[in-house]
Length: 134
Image (cartoon, rainbow, N blue to C red; front, side):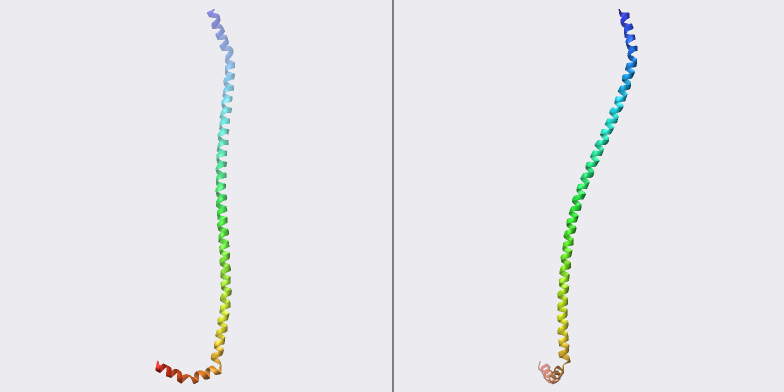
């Protein structure tokens, strides 16, 4: 019976070789698919990590831009207020300057008037006496 068993073992192993090769081929194909799926999974994970990082950077840039915009608006508002104050100061300066020119013109008319010249001429001796006394 041992001979029968040896023959059946040889027969079964020779019959199983094609099946074994077929299974090995299927195993290799399955392992290749697993490797491809793992590679795809790693690529997807890398892509999602990269996308998350980009979103984080965009949020930071958004908030920085928002803060810069607020700062720019405050700067513009302050600048416009300063311009308004300068314009008001220019109007006041023009008003004061016109008043000053009017007073200078009035003084010129007084100094050029005949009564001023006569009064000054008449008062020369009094001025000289005051200087001598002081």
